[in-house]
Every structure is written in structure tokens, then in C-alpha cells.
Amino acid sequence: MRTMMTVGMMFVAAAVSGADWPVFRGNALQNGVVESKLPEKLELLWKFTPANPKFASIEGAVAIADGIVYAGSFDENLYAIDLKTGKQIWATKLGPIKASPSVRDKRVYVGDVDGKFHCVDAATGKPIWNFVTQGEISAGCNFAGDRILIGSHDETLYCLDKDGKQIWTFKTQGPVNGAAAVIGDKTFVAGCDSNLHVLDVAKGEELFAVELGGQAGATAAVKGDSVYVGTMNNQVLGIDLTKKKIDWTFEAPKRKQPFYSSAAVTDDLVIVGSRDKKVYAIDRKTGNSKWEWATDNRVDSSPAVVGNRVFVGSLDRVFYVLDTNTGGKLQDFELDAGILGSPAVGGSCVVVGTEKGTIYCFGGK
Image 1 (cartoon, rainbow, N blue to C red):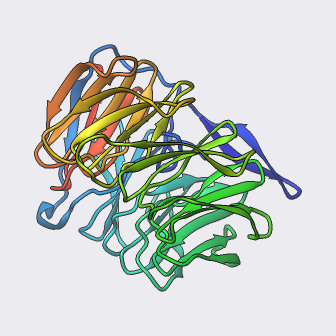
Image 2 (cartoon, helix red, strand yellow):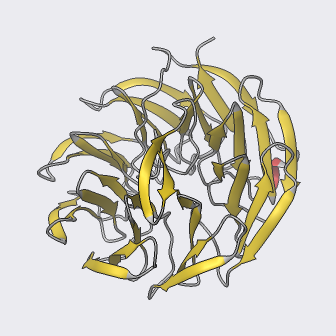
């Protein structure tokens, strides 16, 4: 995986531990694909249940860093859980959380539904600072060097420094639902104003925008010179950054439903879930369908890809392991509730949460 560091005003890639999943989609590109070692067959290693599961839905992905799982819950707690044992290390009450936590330099960052963005100490959970926005925060933050990028439903993408001080803001014409992807000196954000905005990270100035033809509730993923994002009008778009235009458009063929799932992007495929109850694999070059997998309920969970396996949950309560090349089912696990949250991969494990707030860890015994 990759993260970002700053040299002057240029943002260049630096390698981080392959055992970590520090941001919502695993890396700064937000593409949900990591190089990690996982056992051929997954087994349930542990499950963690919060003290008050009635109000503890997990809607985001967990973050994994240095052998610790960090999970935000609607019960207003941010949890730190030992990856090996599933035992709670600490819990800090912050506010109702649906966003995914992010980890960097021994700090954990997460926003809440009340619009506060929190920074806490990763070892103790002790709050360090918070930043107040004027709308719900539903997405995780991303990093560009020492800069922190976080979107809010107050129609703003914020850039903060490591001390929580505002560097710049960029106003959209609708709520920012997804996390900002980062590559080089650019960041990308799509939201409810039906545009993909391409910004200069240093200044927060818009370089150009691409009209999406529909609102985006998902995080855009970057691969090479292209960006991929689903919209609320039944489309997944492949956008050519060099040409600054849409390269191809994929539409689910039967039931017209939104794509709230964020795409996983491999060298060859764009893999994404839909509210039409299916997982789709789309040819990255042409936008044509390669395969589809039907579940029994909508798929808002964002897939993660490791090697030849796709990991994704559905509101049918089943956590699926699919073959990346064919879409065939390799394994499945029935959990205790529907799965809105997205899987995270780290430490030779896959971790995912449910609507009941239970966190499951799968790996090899």
C-alpha cells in the first residue's frame, strides 16, 4: 500500500506497512486493492460486540494499523481492538459515527454525524483536538503529506494541518459523501453536485471538473490516469484524467438502482456493489460487463480485493468471498445482521462490521 509524504509543495508516494489498512479504501488512491498475505481458506478468528449493541451499527470500514483495529460506531464510541485477540484496548465517546476512521503517525482521525472531526491518540484514545463543520461527516479522511482532507455535508471539502487548523476550503454545490482520493499533487472529490472536482492539494484551487450526470454517494477511486465512481442514477463511470472527460459509462442492465458502493480497481477490472443486489465486475478499458454476482439484498458495502479474491458484504447478512476473475463464490459467512460496512485487510486478516455493531475478524487459525 501507499501513503503520501511532502517534499516542499510536492506530494510523493512513500511505502507503508503491507499489514495496515490506514484509510477507508486501504490507500491514498482509495481503490480498495492491497498486496497482503491471506490464508487460502478464511476462518472466523474472533468477533467483538460493543457494550450496547442496540445502538452500535458499523457503517464504515475499520482502520487497521500496528496490530490494532479502530472502529467507529453509532453508539458514539471509537473503539480500539487488539487484532490478534479481539479484546478491547480502549473506547472513547466522541459522537455518533458512521464514517471510517483513518490512522497516521500514531493518531486516529474520525468524523461524526454531528459534524465534528476528531483527532485522538492511537495508543490511549485520549482526544487531542476536534474541528467543527456545519454538517454530517459520513466519509473518512485522507492524507497528503501532513495535510488532512475531510469532506462534510455542509458542501465543503476541508484541508487541515496536523494541529487541526484550517489551511483551505473548497465549496461544492452539494454534500460531500465520499472520501477524497489523492495522487501526486492532486486530490479528487465527487458529491451531490454531480461533478468530479480535481483540485490542487497545495492551494485548494480547482484545476478542472467533469460532469457526472448524476449525484455521487460513493468515493472515487484512482488507477493510473483514470478515476472510477458510481452514481445515484444507476451508472459507473470511467473518467480519463488526461482528456478530462468520461471515457465510458456502465449501466446495470435490469433494475435501475444507485451505486453507493465505492469501487475496487485492479489492473483489469472495476468491481462495485449496487442496490440492485448485485456485485459487478466491469472491464477497466472498455466499460463492458465481465461478470456479476447476485445477493439477496442491496450491496452498499465497498469491495476489497487481495490477489484473486474479492471480499464484500451485503444487507442479506452474508459476507462473500468471490473469485476476482470469474465472480464465482469461493466462501461465504452468514453474520448476525446486514452488512453496510466495508471490509478492511491487515495483518493477514479481513475485518468487517455489521448493522448490529458486531465486528468480525477472519483469517487462518
